[in-house]
Image (cartoon, rainbow, N blue to C red):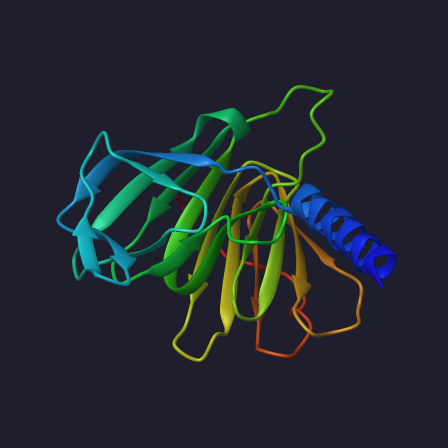
Length: 194
């Protein structure tokens, strides 16, 4: 009996170590600008963040009415301009995901990583996964989870969540809409500037 208990304990320890290896390393987000209110939502309430503060992986944040914030992830050459009334989580439990936008708008600007750096830089919404294949795009998530992606520079690979179809490459000057549970629409010219 003791032998089986020891083996079970060893198997649980090995499983725990394997699962720990899959957990992404924490990411540090620098708060570089705040207009009015950006709040960290915690079990104990909300905490106002200010320019110079830091947020970390797993934090749940929201901006207030007529508010905005700029967050930077220097190690991944990523900058996020977050619009008013936006709710989002920072790099939660999925590897490669930098921000999961629940509702609202943000603009992601990505610099080039070193050629040897093949880390994925993803943004997710209730209806889509966005992979950076370019440098500058906007995301708008509606109350029902439908998402609009507008590309200003470079290319963004867009895939609908829960849909078994090929991803769509959205080039600069184009936009797509993704309804919850559906594939992205064909890209259309947007005519917008940043």
